[in-house]
Image (tube, rainbow, N blue to C red; front, side):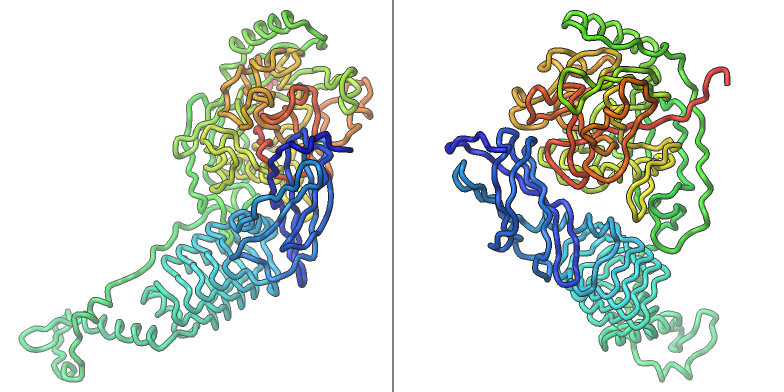
Length: 630
């Protein structure tokens, strides 16, 4: 592949760290380079700390994914990390911007939250991990000197011998964690949850913001400095003194027993000492009633029967994820059946239509949908005023693929979806993603903009978390070998490739989703002004779904295979899906892609780890319906 750029061409490259891998004496990373489609074939070289590591080129979609190994340790968390990408002629030499710590820290946090372990010989001094979810993690002996670990959830984690010198640990949850022989010298420990923690042999000297009651609890277990011990003793003395009252020149207890004989042996207590005896107890967090992440919840149970009105959900994460001492076993979720509407018969085979016929078919299908099915739309609401809608889509049969376009779209074949779907009316927005995941990093920032720079793996995690928040059975099981789709689940998930094409067509065999006029229904290369746009600004398709062509590519659950249609032949297949390792399917085109990529039938793929400003996702779920006559 040879680049067609001229020597005067000016391009912009984006560099992302997609994954981190600690090794025995070094570390590795997966780095993604993103350029414009017109830069396909451009030869690039990637450098780290001035050393050239690998040479490659942008593929036909403008991407280059490179695996880097044997990068020198210790991991650099403080200074700039220099991943440089340079291009050969043409165009003139290009140097990417420096790769700054915030992006490295985000990748590091993602790695730790997925694997929940880190080798102790690779220090994480100065790591910025505020708010990380590290329950049940095995971080024995890891050096966190000077790290910001405020609000981290370490419930049930193994932190034996870990080093937290001068670390920020304010509002950190250590409940049920093993901190035996950990070094917490000089750490800030304000409002820490110490419930059922093991602090045997821990070093708490010079630790800041610990209450007197907390220090009293650890006096016989942990190592304290002389000042801390003196404060405990003075506080104890002051409390004893406050239990007596001075009456008629004598010290009397509250039950009026004369303590004059003892009064002379008690030294006067100054006002300053009395002031230090005031209770500084930290609040105890509410007890957890859920089981660990990935399993079903005991509470809350949400009735999703028709959800005709918006409901609020409690997004306090502590109520849904418990990584510490396990509570009593949660009862299995009872999936309540929802009343099924009387839908139309299966769709007839689709034929190629003229523009006028497409518009006529669109209007008829839209009218039918509005009168018979739209009333089953579910409007949902999350705490904080974030709302999202799910459109009901009937089951049916359609012709998938094409016999006239790209090779990977052939052959055209019949597909039947045997179940109805609830489909997100729009792409997942940034405010929606933030409310569920509690963190984000988008390129085109805006509450109503679609959530970009989200990998396939993160989209899977989002679906499971949202399912738990709504009391639904999560659709995905995360195992050491990978991700399993629990097909009987009623929780949120990504659409399969067949489901995506079916709902994008919406009963109308148009070129794009909603019209044969691309400008009418999509943001793409010619009208986007090099940016994504707020959702639902273009024409919807006949089933009320926005931006299924353009704006952002959409992740599908399927693993991409170039010839996945070939094995199906022309026979009808039921509920097809391709699972396994490898790149994942993306559909629908984006703001940066040319017109042909916005076609409903167009297929593309991307690594599951890749994050790009061109890709987002839409959620679906399979409601459990009570079939009529059954």
